[in-house]
Length: 366
Image 1 (tube, rainbow, N blue to C red):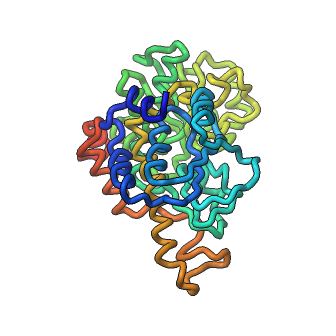
Image 2: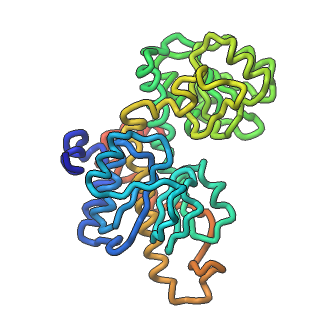
């Protein structure tokens, strides 16, 4: 099957309104004509829509295979003549790199980077390159709050746990992903508790739903919560966040079904892979579609449009030597937030033409 045939067979335009809008515009504007780009988004069927959008924009496309992926889709890309590379491969010279998790931060693009995740930001903190971070703004909340929580529940079903109703779900982490899991579990009748660092402000989602929150430093209380739990899931975004002997022992002795939803191993070496579903790899990555396209496409669109913005800024400012930094790049260097007007445009498109209007309005309090 061709790229277009797979997309048409599996998705309708209402599932990717922002990317569909971008495709329509790029099809005649061709902002990436003559540009060599690398996209490191995890390779699954839903990311094919992101690839198609770049191809419509004229890009010479390379795909980075640095994270869990669907090998069937990787094979298709190669059959279509799209190069698939790994972080350890020869450093090709790209115009723009659309990174994910900072896996290609050591490459040297002509124009700059766009990083998709918060996890990858630390790779760019001292970068001399311009770096837009898609996860710094509002759009990424659609994916993490709505889509990732849904992916956790679907992942449990994939592994034979079809219901969390009346079950005790213990969530480590109260960021966007953690709160997304909380909302999805509560909506399915679970009894939810959260463990986090309460020295930081507690997310309003937890307060609004009267969720019990335990501070991670209160080890005895956390151990008790683990002992009582039917399901334990990590979503702290911190490698080895639970790497304490007391917590490891409690997890090893617990009856709970244990899973990770963070990019890194959040349990640490004290908890073996065999104790965690999907061998500590994020549970939703055991699915054919880790995050449904309808939840992730706004993030993928922002990822791409920030790359277009880098090109526009570079074209406007490259003649002004006074604006160039030490590496020869213009305007700025290091991580930058997405412009609010760009995010607002993507959100409005999703609200007006997407199939998740009700969920998105509820998330935004509209």
